[in-house]
Image 1 (tube, helix red, strand yellow):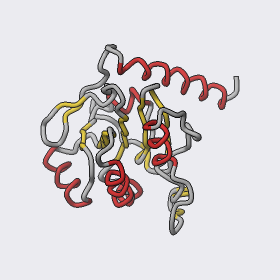
Image 2 (cartoon, rainbow, N blue to C red):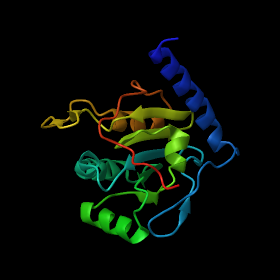
Image 3 (cartoon, rainbow, N blue to C red):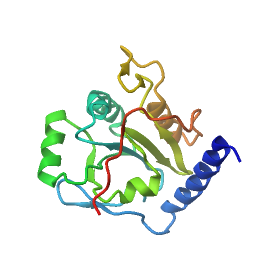
Length: 193
């Protein structure tokens, strides 16, 4: 079996697993937000779209996407879209996470995943890496857009906006034209044990 075929089968299995999450199945990982509230980002209300973006306070690419994430959040205002930014840094305190969010003016709900429970559930590998969950389960996984071609190689502007397009498709009840891309960014740090 080729690596590409194995990856496709794993992606299909993950899609099937996540399609069940909105229908009364187990809620998946429950994570604390920087403000202390607890969230289950894999559980969606009928018609809701959840966007989960894994970030790290130490990843320059994730931090560079803060303005883009603010623009996207503003575009989704008033729609049934819930944005979760998931900090995967194992030793980041809630106070430090809140300070980071304030410094970069991060939108959405900031969740802490020091043990990588949600990262493991979604098989995330990099920051920033985005996941879109809609009525059919996992709609999209990958980069925010194509502005970063490689680590250290950034274009002036993005030409492709896969995350934005996947959310629009999910809101319209359609399949995303592009369901998977490779995220460019920092590897996830080792989780807290």
